[in-house]
Image (cartoon, rainbow, N blue to C red; front, side, top):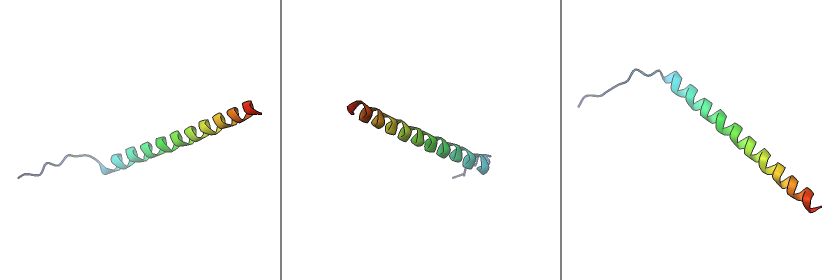
Length: 47
């Protein structure tokens, strides 16, 4: 059985993974900031 190898550069894969990780981290930070701001809003309404 023949092996099929593509001519992809491994550096491109790592760069894409790094971008995805950065995007997910920024998304999580934004989500936590949104949740904290909503909690602060609800607490301020209760006071």
